[in-house]
Image 1: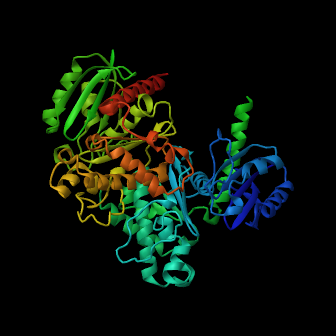
Image 2 (image 1 turned 45 degrees about the vertical axis):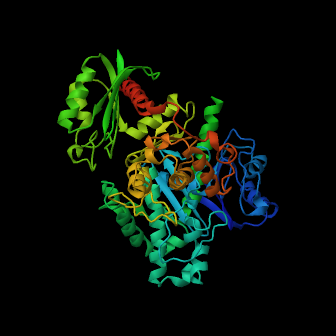
Image 3 (image 1 turned 60 degrees about the vertical axis):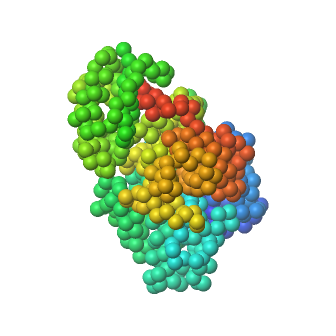
Length: 297
Length: 297
C-alpha cells in the first residue's frame, strides 16, 4: 500500500507513489495538455497501485476551502482549458480514498518543513521563481491559509530606478512575478536566463527584486527558514547576492542573528532539491489518511 | 479576582483590570517616561487588586521567544531609555502570577478576533496607523509568530510617482511607516493630519500607500478580516478610498467576494474602538492562566 502524490504544474504533472518518509517508489512526468488528455494518463498511472491516500499540490489559484461548493477546483487560471476544472473531484471519482489538496507551493513548503531544509521547524517559507513566482508557508506547523491560500508571487515591490521594463503580469504589470519570473527575464534581456548566466547585471537586478520580496515576507510572516527553489534559482550565484541585499534592506532593524550574521543558513536552496513538491504531496496524503481515521473514530 | 492588562505604548501605558469578556472594571493611563518613573506607577495601580493573571501587549520590537534568555524584554527600540528593558521580568517580580506577553498590535489583533470586528473568525489582521505603523495577525486561531513577531509596518511599497517626500523611517526611509505614519504626514504637508482633514490630496495619497500595504498583506497572509485602527484612521474618509484602491490594485486577480463586491465589510474599523489592545491584554491574561493550569496538571 502506497501514498499517491500529484504535483500538478502548468507545464507538467508529476505523479508519484511512495511512503511518508519521502521515499518515492515510482514517479512519472506527464505533459500538461487539456484536462481530457492529461487526466486519463494521471489516473492510469495510479491505477497500477494500491493506494491508501492521495495528496495533490496544484498550480492555482485553487479552491482549498473544504466548505465551498467548488472545493478542489482550479479556479481563475489564465490556462483556459483548466479554468474551473474539478481536479479533486476527478481524482476522487477514480480513487475512493482520502485526498488532501493544496497549492503546489504550499505542498513544497510542507515537504521542506517535514523532510527538507526546514525539517523540525514549525515555520518556513518556500518560494519558487520559475515561469511564475509562487510561495507557500508553514505557520505554527500548519500550511498557511485564511480566506484562501496565499498568492505571494503578486506582491508589489519598488522598482529598481534603472529598470525600464514595464513588467509582464497581465493583472499587475510590475508586481514581483511581472518583474522577476523567467518570462520577465527573457522579455527584459532578450534571452532566456540560462543563456545569461555570466551576465552580472542580470542577476544583480534579479537579486534586487527577490530580496525586496523576501524583506516583505520576513517582516510580515517572520518565517524560521526561507527556501528558494524553481528554475531561476538554479543560478546559484543568486544566493549570496540575495542574502547580502536582504541584510542591506533590513538595515539592522531586526536584531535577529538569523537575518544578520547567519543569513547564509537562513535563505537556502531546497533540501529536497526538485522533489519538494512531490514529497509534500506524500505528506499531504498522510494527513488525508489521518484526517479520515479521526473522522471514523 | 480580576485579569490585569497592560497596553504599553511609546507615549502612554494603559493599565486595566477586567474579565475575559472584555468588561473593564477600571483603567488608567500613565505617560510613558523613563522606566524608573513609569513602571512604579504601573505596579502601584495593579497592587490595588487581587489578580489571577496578567496580559501585556507592548511597543516593540520585543522578545516573545519563551526559550530566550531575554524573553519579555523590549529590545532594539529607538526609545533609548527602554532599550533592553526587562518589562515582563519587572512585572513578574511584583506579581507572582501567570503572565502572557506579546506586541501591542498582536494583542489588539487578538482582542478584535475574540470580541471585536473579527469575532468568530480564525484569522484577522489588525493594523494601526498612528505615530508609527504596526500590525498584528491571528492565523489559524493563534497570534502569528515565527522567528519573532511580525514587523509589518516596515514593508517596502512602491512610491507614488508624484510624491517627492523621501520618507521618515530612520532604518528604511520610505518604507510604509516612513511614508504613511502620522509624523510622515506632518513632515510632508507641514501640518498634522488632524488639521488637514478637508484636504482631499492628503488622504488620497495616504490611502494609496495604505492600500499598497494591504495588497501585500492580503496576498501573503490571506486574512479573513482586515481591521484598521490608530490615530490616522480616525479620518474616516480614508476607508472608502482604501477599499476602492485595494480593489483596483488587485485588479480581479483574487476571485474572492470578500475583496471584490463585499470589500466594505472586509476592511473595517476596530469593533472595539480604542479598546482593542487593552481588551486583547485581558484575553492574553486568560491564556496565561490556562497555560499555567495546564502546566500544573
